[in-house]
Each structure stands twice: as C-alpha cells, then as structure tokens.
Image 1 (cartoon, helix red, strand yellow):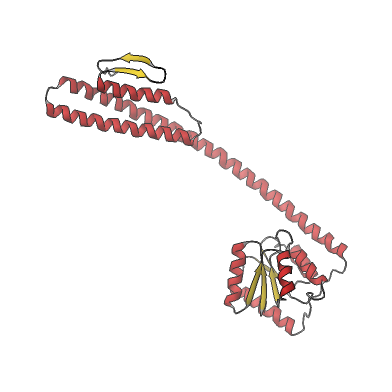
Image 2 (cartoon, one colour; image 1 turned 90 degrees about the vertical axis):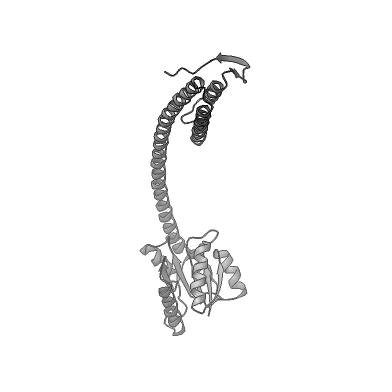
Length: 288
C-alpha cells in the first residue's frame, strides 16, 4: 500500500516514514500541502497522513483541495497533529471529509492500528469516499478562519508567557552576574593583597640573607607567587570581558601593579611606556 506522509518538521516526517516503512508500507513524504499535491499528480497514494499546521499550504487546505478534485476526492486522509488538538479542530477535520484524526505523539502500534481500521472501512465501503459534510466554501472558510484565529490567540498568549519567563530569567542572570562579579572582586583583591605582602617579605629576606642556598629558595618562592599573581590577573581580565564591562576595572592600573612587582624584584626604575613617564623609584618593599 502506498502512503504519503506530509509534515513540515523534518524529524517528525522521518519518524513517521520509519514507522510506516517498518509496517511494510511504501512511503513517500512531503513537507507541505503544495509539495504533496505535486507528488499526488504523478503518483496517487492509497492513503495520506498529514500534519495540519504547515507553511504555504496547511493540512486543512490540502484536504479541501483533494475533496474538490474528482480524481483525488476518494483518497483517505488522516490528520496527525500536535497543534490542532482541540475538539473543534477534530470536528472541522471530520466535516472536511477526513478519515481519521490522531494527536501527536502517539504510539507507533496505535498509528498502524488506526491505519488498518481506516483502510478496512474504506475497502468495506463503510466510509467509501469520506465525503465532506461542508457543502459551501463560505461555510468552510468561516469555520477555518475561526480555528486559525483561535490558534493565533493561543500563540500570542504563549508568546506573552514566554517573554515574561525570559525577562525574569534575564533579570536573574544579571543579578547572578553582579553577585559573581562582587565575589570575584573581593576574593581576587584579598588574594592579591596577600601575594603582595608575601612577595615583599621575600624580597626583604633575600636582601638580608647572604646564604646562596636560602637566596635560591626565596627566589623560587617569589617566582611561584609572581606566576600566581599573573593567573589571578588573567582571571580578572577574562571575567570582565565576559561581563561586557558590567563591573569594569582599569586595565592600566592592573598593568602598573604588575610593574610594581617586577620593579621591586629588579630594584630599578618604573616607567609607564604608554606616557613615557618615570613613575617612581624604590629600593625596598615596605609592607603596611
């Protein structure tokens, strides 16, 4: 038996095709009503399973076009929908002449059972052509527009709820960012303060000792602390870049602090290369 599966959602279309193929049906697929009509022109299927909400031509319009055409009016069409799921939606589908109405998601075995029952009724003449009960287009379009307006209202309500949720989440994220920034600022400030003290005392110890072994140990300790300070500096820089200057700091000041540490190691002169000015000159570090 030839079945045409019509659905604009690729994953749903592939899943339905797989379910039908596994049951032994010869399946073709289309992504909307217009594509389905082109396929039907070339090869008439024995059954159509179609979604309702689709671009260009939805399932309701596809069903109406099929029922208007004498050559396709006898093709059973089953709607398989996740959007038009209310009783009034099903009522309109059956008034159009649909052979069945399935709400997504549904168990594969249930889908196959509905198909077999539908085709059994078709073969037995119980619902020979699934004739539409709506005889006038004006009546049909009135009912059709009512369902479209109802879905539009539902979508607007859902959009409003989603926007409120997103706004609340955005405000919460800003609060979390501010909290993270404050914690990071306090922690890094305390860490760097202790590092500066430790480096300073190591510098003093290095100047007071005349033992090469101790001096070497002090230098290794100092170098390790300098590397730790660089890691913290990079952490601050990356954090501020992520926050888009929500809690900015002065990078020039950060650079100058690094200069102080390096200068204290060299016992030399600090020069700000950006302004070519001599800032200060120290001989030793004086904590406190």
